[in-house]
Image (cartoon, rainbow, N blue to C red; front, side):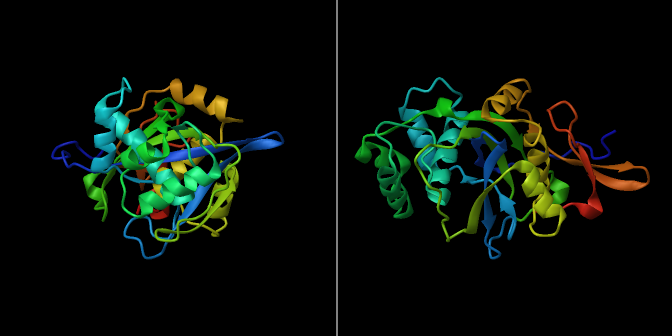
Length: 261
């Protein structure tokens, strides 16, 4: 039973998007791209996260001018996911045209210089391929969590592009690496890394599947509903909980263990 009522829970989070970039392996579970947040960041400082960030007006402007057949906020979210991945990792996911490492580098440099995604796509003769991203989840913290930064975050799956090498953007992140979901969780359990509650729950879900195609099939089998964790007493201890119908193998964790922001 949800012990936190929905009364008054009408606060708005800033729209954001993040991408689980999947690199299939022939000898084991797929690698996922993880980035480590700088310890100075206001949100998830020092934690391992997937590439991503806030949706900006340029993402909405590009969504308005292209033919995508999606709900406007969904299209802007996918564009933000593509843009943020380029900025943070140098990987050109969700792009259509003559895409090579040099082109992605020029695109990244332009974004870092303050140009919009639309401007850089026009300059380089590229388009976005929004269907390259598969919706996976959507998370929003509950008011009681008192997060310093409140984001309404859309999670997507994308296949790692071939012939490109990821490189860290040191303005927000200090390193990046490829790792299976299970190995990343093992690092956190060994005290070698930090993961916040949404990342942990998503890694547990991702660890169930053997490759990108299996992950996509799994994602399409479940609705993408906004996950808003709640507190609940279980066996005499307060847990942070999520719904049990969205594909997550673990749906609660004792509050004393939870890393939230």
